[in-house]
Length: 609
Image (tube, rainbow, N blue to C red; front, side, top):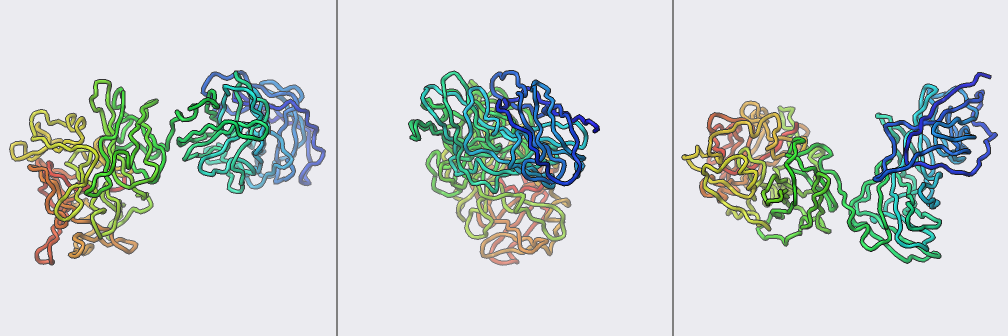
């Protein structure tokens, strides 16, 4: 019979195979003709497992086995075994021409494994064997597929490797702190990028028990399906069935495919409490405003918003202010815990244990105490991508609320949001009532008359200083003159909108002009304007009032509003403006108001990029 060669490349990954001899399976699934095949095993270089310290040479051991599928099958598929092992090992077995056009393979062989329609079904043991310096081979899954005679393997799992300070344990148990599923049956498919994706939706095991002898000086490994542990994880150290020590990691932790994080002396007091991780707020891109939707741990990079430009060498970070958008100040830490960590080019922070909607500002400082940059944290349970709106007569996606708003309801003032001076990235408190009472914050906001020091850099360094201006500075907060590049249709580093959004177009290109005069109605009860949406319903624009450029106080709350745009003129800016009084005769709506001075504080409604 014709001898075929399939190649599987194994590089230096965190993998050690089992030493137990496994006999060949005489039962071949399917009814197609099988041929003897010699497989040369290797793992794709692009998915080499990563460990936080140096790791030794990895080889196949003799008697390692594979499940190879040439067609839909149960009972483990075709079993292949290597006699010699090595960095590139030859595996022997029998298989036919793949019915799906590709061979699918699983390490290690398991009689319970199956294959159908591009998906391999396997099993991650809830009880794993502790092997000093290695994994339980039955718990380290790899898969590969190929239409040719060369197949690259990819790691399916990630996990944790740990050492202990004390001996005497006979088991260590891992569990997530939010009742996550961690072991049992799983399916493995391949994403569009070719990497494997594991799904444990049919599993139910909430813990993994690593059993054996544990001695100081060695590392031991939990193999875990990639997932997020939002509330961290717990390790329980056992002797004779009893828990003798417990270590808790309270932080958000991500287990990534092919990465094994290291925890030294995991049984030592406090060893897990210093683990720092968080949900990456920049997953959709960097910005000056990050939306936080729920209680948890978070991180973002130390770069200027909407770019990858470093803010400089950061020595520390802190919360400058917090507010729940009411007139009563919250306690410090009510929204974001005060302990802000700077590590590995990122800021890490945690919300309060009980999630509280509101707004906050986090600042990064150099060693001299100079504020280098700051970021607005918008704590509100909404996803702008899911709630975006399209007005009649337009094709422009708009956010359903103002930046900083906690509601879209016309009732009350939680829909008002925050104020901005044109071109500045950092917000100022909005109004909480019809008399212009500002939102109470845990920080201090200052006012400064515009002078020669009032530059863009000064504004960055003093995000809580409202720069007062008058005719002497052209009613602009910048003393040297106009800068039309601060907010533009091409999103800048000073744009205050979240990732994927920007300050909207204005003038004839503005969404309000495109919607047209018959697209809106004035609300004389709740005081605002409603725009009709293409799919029914309305978009609510509240009469937020504004911050006066010369005095710095909030005026005309519940009557008047301007909404900033990127449309500029020589002196001023085009806005969407309205004044709502008691009836239509006394009120007006300006879909394109061309003469708004830049030093005032107004609301921003973001437009989708």
